Amino acid sequence: MLSIEPEKQADSCIIWLHGLGADASDFYPIGKMLSPVLAEHAIRWIFPQAPIRPVFINGGVPMPCWYDILAVNPSRVVNPQHVTEICAQINELINQQIALGIAANRILLAGFSQGGAVALECALTHPKALAGLMALSTYLIKAPKHVSHSELPILLVHGTEDMVVPIPLADDTLIALQKLGYTLQSHRLEMAHEVCNEEVDIIAEFIRRCLQR
Image (cartoon, rainbow, N blue to C red):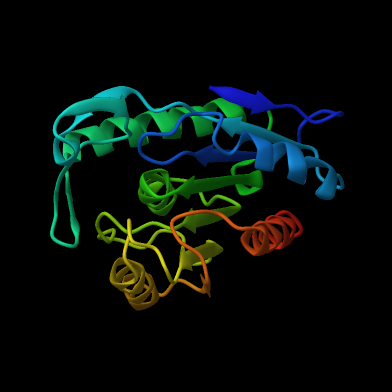
């Protein structure tokens, strides 16, 4: 796990989960870049590291993986036990930040691709309302049975040229969350399975708005 500490005592926190096969350093540079841009907030950035697991759809090759993916058809069939275990770990990380004095409504979850799916799962089911959720180039594993925090700000960003997580999965996620009553900020950008400069600007403004509420 990597982290970035603010110059003064942290009053907010962003927990950012990387994608399949990447590691904790993947989005660390974005945190370093956005820290001075968002200097009005004392943000602690945390970048957890996924465990190494064999990935079934990749021929069983071990790699950093939040959960195993069993099929792509095109929706994802995943190992539900892995999802439950990882969400428990992320929730514990959130609770640790709360114990350190950062209120739940000053904590944002972010994730890219598989990390975004975990961020969605955790933020939508966490017992406390968080400051916001950024789900980037990702998909909803399953819609929650109950809506606990319909006021949760959610940012969805997806590339129109994404061949890894196709646009129909993003559309299904958007529709499912709208049906549940969430107010969403959704963007389709001309990019592949990546994060582009325009998206970073969108992310910065979203974070600022969430922490100014």
